[in-house]
Amino acid sequence: MGAKPERVFGSVVVAALIACGGSQQGEAHPAQGVRVVLDTTAPFAAAPDFRARLDNTIDAALQYWGGTWSDVDGKSITLVDDQYLDCNGSSALGCFDGDIRITTRDPGIGTFACIEETVLVHEIGHAVIGDPDHTDPRWMEMDALAAELSGRAGYSTDGAVPCVTYVSVWRHPLGSP
Ligand SMILES: [Zn+2]
Image 1 (cartoon, rainbow, N blue to C red):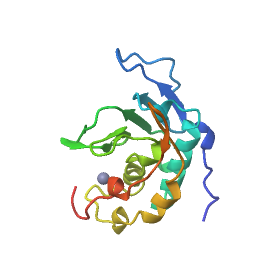
Image 2: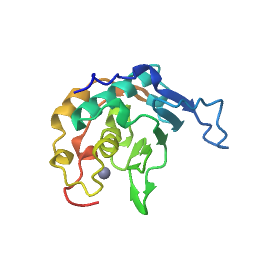
Image 3: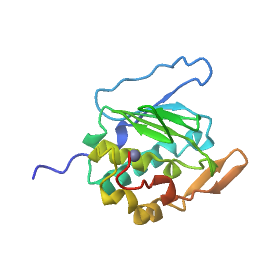
Image 4: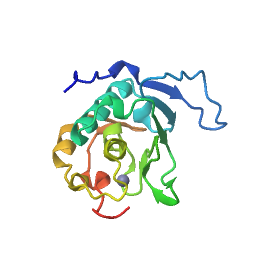
């Protein structure tokens, strides 16, 4: 057993991406840490607690999947408004292909009120264990994690709303890609 891996809370770098035009502003490209690209109009991504909430959600997901911050080191997390992402030829709410992309909109719920509601915890799972065919039973066992991450402040264009996590958003039927 080596030393407990350091939690790099301070190293999440948020890079603002101008949605129309696509030019990126002064991004840092740290060799270490997680690079975050915001290509979204979701109010939670502009809230002052976003970085802390993102760090905490990543941390909780890493603990759930048995990973450490080294599993996401050097990867990027991109948040987009597009409801469906192209992920290796299929349509998805999130994708891990070496980097993580997630939508801020759910087809049923609408624009997510908080980072905790997104499929980030699912994609962190792929970053930690791989398992593209979802054979690990943990893909269907996220109730405790959902409870842990639920009940915080949420944001909408009309003001404060609850942040409610739904395991149905994160779960995936076992044995299917
Ligand atoms: Zn998956």
